[in-house]
Length: 74
Image (cartoon, rainbow, N blue to C red; front, side, top):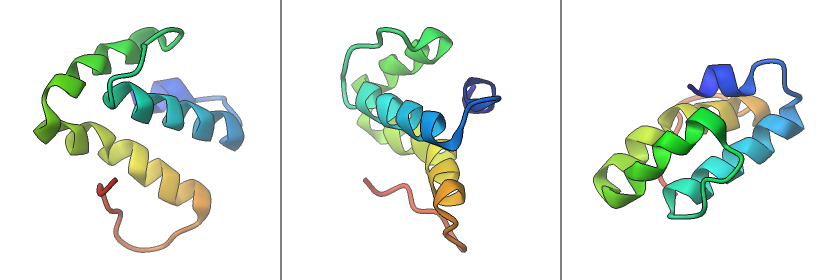
Protein backbone atom coordinates (compact mmCIF):
# COMPACT_ATOMS: atom_id res chain seq x y z
CA UNK A 1 0.00 0.00 0.00
CA UNK A 2 2.80 2.39 0.90
CA UNK A 3 4.68 1.79 -2.34
CA UNK A 4 1.62 2.53 -4.44
CA UNK A 5 0.81 5.60 -2.33
CA UNK A 6 4.25 7.21 -2.70
CA UNK A 7 4.94 6.18 -6.28
CA UNK A 8 5.56 9.22 -8.50
CA UNK A 9 5.55 11.63 -5.53
CA UNK A 10 8.40 13.90 -4.53
CA UNK A 11 10.31 13.06 -1.36
CA UNK A 12 8.59 16.00 0.34
CA UNK A 13 5.15 14.75 -0.65
CA UNK A 14 6.05 11.25 0.53
CA UNK A 15 7.25 12.62 3.88
CA UNK A 16 4.01 14.60 4.30
CA UNK A 17 1.95 11.51 3.50
CA UNK A 18 4.00 9.53 6.00
CA UNK A 19 3.13 12.07 8.71
CA UNK A 20 -0.55 11.82 7.83
CA UNK A 21 -0.45 8.01 8.07
CA UNK A 22 1.28 8.22 11.46
CA UNK A 23 -1.45 10.59 12.62
CA UNK A 24 -4.08 8.21 11.28
CA UNK A 25 -2.59 5.37 13.30
CA UNK A 26 -2.80 7.59 16.36
CA UNK A 27 -6.53 8.02 15.76
CA UNK A 28 -6.73 11.05 13.45
CA UNK A 29 -9.34 11.54 10.71
CA UNK A 30 -8.67 9.40 7.60
CA UNK A 31 -9.89 12.12 5.21
CA UNK A 32 -8.15 12.30 1.83
CA UNK A 33 -6.02 9.19 2.35
CA UNK A 34 -7.79 6.98 -0.17
CA UNK A 35 -6.99 3.29 0.29
CA UNK A 36 -4.63 4.14 3.15
CA UNK A 37 -7.67 5.06 5.26
CA UNK A 38 -8.10 1.30 5.79
CA UNK A 39 -5.11 1.50 8.15
CA UNK A 40 -7.22 3.58 10.52
CA UNK A 41 -8.56 0.43 12.14
CA UNK A 42 -5.06 -0.37 13.38
CA UNK A 43 -5.41 2.46 15.93
CA UNK A 44 -7.75 0.16 17.87
CA UNK A 45 -4.94 -2.38 18.29
CA UNK A 46 -1.86 -0.68 19.78
CA UNK A 47 0.24 -3.84 19.42
CA UNK A 48 -0.20 -3.63 15.63
CA UNK A 49 0.77 0.01 15.19
CA UNK A 50 4.48 -0.82 14.99
CA UNK A 51 3.75 -3.44 12.32
CA UNK A 52 1.76 -0.94 10.27
CA UNK A 53 4.54 1.65 10.58
CA UNK A 54 7.50 -0.57 9.69
CA UNK A 55 7.48 0.14 5.95
CA UNK A 56 6.86 3.83 6.59
CA UNK A 57 9.80 3.97 9.02
CA UNK A 58 12.00 2.31 6.39
CA UNK A 59 10.90 4.93 3.87
CA UNK A 60 11.58 7.69 6.39
CA UNK A 61 15.12 6.38 6.98
CA UNK A 62 15.75 6.03 3.24
CA UNK A 63 14.61 9.59 2.56
CA UNK A 64 16.84 10.85 5.36
CA UNK A 65 19.80 8.77 4.11
CA UNK A 66 20.10 6.93 7.41
CA UNK A 67 22.10 3.71 7.05
CA UNK A 68 21.55 0.63 9.18
CA UNK A 69 18.60 -0.87 11.00
CA UNK A 70 15.25 0.86 11.12
CA UNK A 71 13.44 1.30 14.40
CA UNK A 72 9.67 1.15 14.83
CA UNK A 73 9.83 3.11 18.08
CA UNK A 74 7.74 6.25 18.07
